[in-house]
Length: 211
Image (cartoon, rainbow, N blue to C red; front, side, top):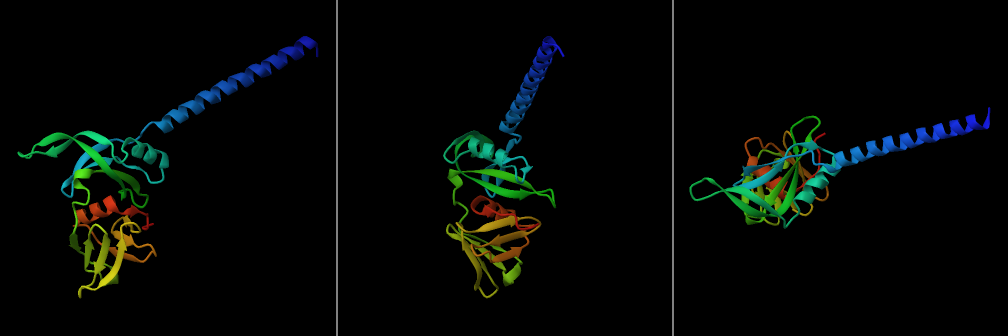
């Protein structure tokens, strides 16, 4: 092999390496841009007597998209032109301050999706106190909610389960499971009680306990 041939081979290998670096760099940059772009959209629903800004469904373990959602709606930020019913019942665009973001399971069993919900300061803790009749485990027939937490009671009025909001976890699948800090649970149906589910999503901490 002549010296010229060796030089040409060396240069050819160098060109191939350079092309590969450029190709994989562009590919990596495209992937990063996709990861930085929100895949969700939002809509306003009226839930439990208050406006809620809800995301479209996300993959349950897509932490990056949840992070992007929370960055777009931090507590204390303003969401503009939220339709709030006025005196005549028509939606009046109103700027509202965010109080918190809730997480919930959504349809797609047995592989559920994640839903994110934005709540607003004028309705913070406005739901309390409230009670709901249930048919649950531990002989629970009623669940009480207040600003401090949740308690389940039996037919005699005795508390059979309780937890402050700080340690309460829930899973809203085909039914509701709530657990305290020691993982003691109560499970009950909620098909006709959307307000009960809405309060747990707003103030509780989602922990998938169904599958």
